[in-house]
Amino acid sequence: MLTLAEEKAKRYALINYTLTIVEVVYLLALLFLFIGLGFSRLLAENLSRYLLKYYFVIPTYIFIAYAAYYILNFPLNFYQSFILEHKFSLSKQKIKDWLADQIKSGIISYMIILILIAVFYYVLRHFSKTWWFIMSLFWIFFHLILAKVTPIIIVPLFFKYKQLSDEELRQRIIKLAQKVQVKILDVFEIDFSKKTLKANAAFLGWGASRRVILADTLKDKYSHDEIEVILAHEFAHYKLNHLLKLVLIDSAATLILFYLIFKTSFFTLSIFGFSSLLDISTLPIIMVYFVLFGIIMQPLLNYISRIFERNADRMALGVTGLKGAFISMMNKLAEQNLADRRPNPLIKFFFFDHPPVDERIRLASSYK
Image 1 (cartoon, rainbow, N blue to C red):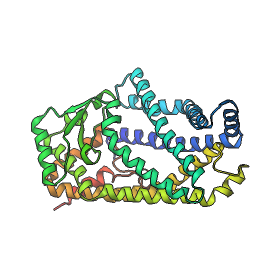
Image 2 (cartoon, helix red, strand yellow):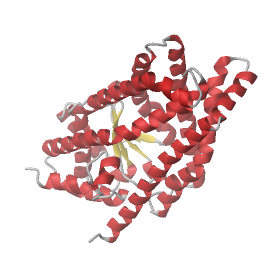
Image 3 (cartoon, helix red, strand yellow):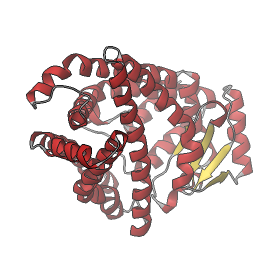
Image 4 (spheres, rainbow, N blue to C red):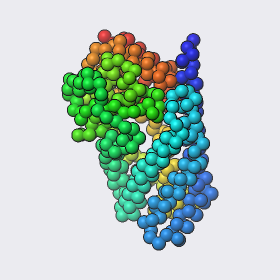
């Protein structure tokens, strides 16, 4: 029988699962309508007619299409990321701050999308036979660069972070990093509580930018032992080369996707009355490929990720020996983040990239 807290977490999780499915179906429907009803062709033709330079067409097309999608998706987005979080007492963020974050994330997303799509059409125009391979390499390289600059440029746009003020905890984390031979720039804390009451910690960046970031919602409510075992888990991912393996897996998936577009796009385009991917009007079709491929690949990526997470848990327990702290930490996180502790196997298959909380606790309980 579920406790009141577990029932609340189940309700929260069920709503999020439903909204995620609705969002994906809604996006696909909008893409098919945009291309099928001729809106994409009409937009591209008018932009080509009224803009003097061709290189203005792509950024303007993307801006209009992205803005239209944001407006059409706004009710769903607002409910899921603002109303729902407040309804379940997971956020105290004010509406003006939420809107400011939406503007900032919208600008960042637009710039990232613009770079990727602009390079896509440039490569497609100049390398008609090998564009899929060249674009895959660029896509991989771009995501690596993004991983490096995220803690330096993007995170500070949304959070204020400073060197961890708890010097005892800071030194403990630095010693842990030295013990497992992981080089870190420093340990930082961020004002997570101004946006959400959920707890989190991260090991971000690579090379000289690699750093530990602790949310204040975690730092202030968890013991040093519990925080140490959390960070031991994050360091374990690095020591076990999980990040490199995920990059290789993502790279292979990216290569397969672009090759699939290369081999099948002529047939797909003909269904909608197009003859070439170079036509910016066909961009929604490319987006459909990405969405459908993501749906197909997600269960496999989740399965691999869950294996990595279990291995990281085992290493964290072995390095720290803090079995009790691990179990208490998982129970706290489950309650604080309203985690679905025992999901339906089908839900786990499609949505969980981490083992459910109760599975992780059983693993720790049985650890010798």
